[in-house]
Figure: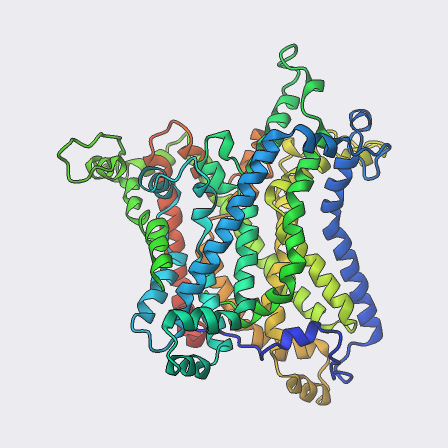
Amino acid sequence: MDIPIKPKANSIDKFFSPKQKRQRDMLALSPVTNAVLTILLAIGCILTLIPIYVIVIASLTSEASLLTHGYRLWPKEFSTMAYTFLFSQGSIVITAYKNTIISTIAGTVLSVLMVGLYAYPLSRPNFKFRRFFTFFAFFTMLFGGGLVAYYMVTRQILQIQNSLWALFLPSAFSPFWVIVMRTFYQTNVPNEVIESARIDGASEWRTLFQIVMPLAVPGLATVALFSAIGIWNNFFNCLLLVDEAKYYSLQFTIYTTLNNIRFLLENADKMAGLVNVSELPSQTFRMSMAVVTVGPIIFAYPFFQRYFIRGLTLGAVKG
Amino acid sequence: MVLPGAIWLLLFSYLPMPGIVMAFKTYRLVRPPEDALIQNKFIYSLIKSPWVGLENFRYLTLPTNVDATLTYIRNTVLYNLLFMVVGLVLSVALAVVIFELTNRFLAKLYHSIFFLPFFISWIVVAYVVYALGSSQGIVNSIITPMGFAPIEVYKEKLAWPFIFLIANIWKYTGNGSIIYLATITGIDRELYEAAAIDGAGKWKQFTNITLPHLIPVIVLLQILAVGRIFGSDFDMFYTLPNGAALVRDVTQTLDVFVYGMLRSNLPLGYPAAAAFLQSIVGFILILITNAIVRKTKPEMALF
């Protein structure tokens, strides 16, 4: 497993940095092609943003307007009722929020630590079991025991079901990011720095935490970002391992809400008299739930962005 | 230092591996006797359960089930192939175009926007599908006044391949392009200048310089993708159709099928047999693909 690309340090940073002038007059696109591509991409961007727009607008539509006119691209009446309602008494949402925030933080810290620790020895040429532990991690990317065995092991042997552990422990490590981080250490932390730290008497651990990891911040930040997204958006762990409402994650909660309502609405005629459709949690309420689910993780983006493109490119991916 | 990660791998990845034998057993829960060496119920029952050979696989190919099994295998493989090809082409195209844009500020803005969907969960996408395509949805509020018959996606089989394809492109193209963009920025500019002097146009430059530099990454990612061809993006296939039974023929993949059997009252051996196929076929395919690559271009092989 070698890394096929080793971009020159920071080349992608320079590419995106407006301060650096690229010398490419000879290679520049013709103005016409450039204009056409710019417009095409702009259209692509608008299309990309439409789904996000749809859900925000739906959450801001007033309930009455929704019932009479259905969803619209531009609602007849706006209303922020759904959000007021959500934060005043949406206790299931608040519990789910709490669970998800706790597990995202715990899972992200854990995965940065475990990946950072596991990858470091693999990047050092003098580590005796380097090949073994690389293979040990890599093999799991190729072969697995399958869902049924995994389900039985997590529930019957590890017994992490119905706890917050279930929401983040299964996602707290990733062989893929180990390989990326290993390369990142190799290409970004000069061997001389590590050796001189060792000569000055720093222990292996101290070298790692005080010398190597600070130099590897972009890589570690990338691992942090992706694992945070992974756990925040995780649905499967909760679906598979949690049966008690008090441990539900955010994604699971909003999914079951959508699912229940759709079922009830579709079968309303069969259940006439049993369910009063107008008493169901309002449609806009559900859309606002979806919006607040997206919120926090989007805000994480700018904080990590300065690191992550560099982290990804220098650790440049390989299986 | 490798210890925490190694323990995690052992528990979450290696421990389930022997469990793959469930595919050849009739799993029965037995309480281990007091004096048994192994007190864990699952391990004890697994060892004590009788071997039944291919019995579990026979269930998948019963006349009543064989159509469903084949349909789900077809869905899984076809969707994966579709996403592989379309994803590859669009990601590479996006990376090249972003790189070529003259205005750097716009290039960055565009790339940030295309990457954004990667942050949004499939559950939220399921809400979008609902808001757009349900009987009260936006699509209907636009097309019914124009005189078209209303559409409801949860009853419309034809719509789903497009929904999945668009959703997949939407979510992953920006993320997929990062790696190609990184490779392109690493290519020596002098190569392009020399080519330009020799009169090569942009397309010639792409096929003769950019593409050869991208091939190793492309091959690598495709080998890994081939290994996952019997797997699928569970969250997407499970949540977008929202359990709609009418479109199951075109939305259900093996993963979702296995999960459904696992949570039903069927003997565990049945889903285990399907999961066994997924693991083994994926593993064998990755070995074969890698062997072929190794034969033709040894330096690009995964291992």
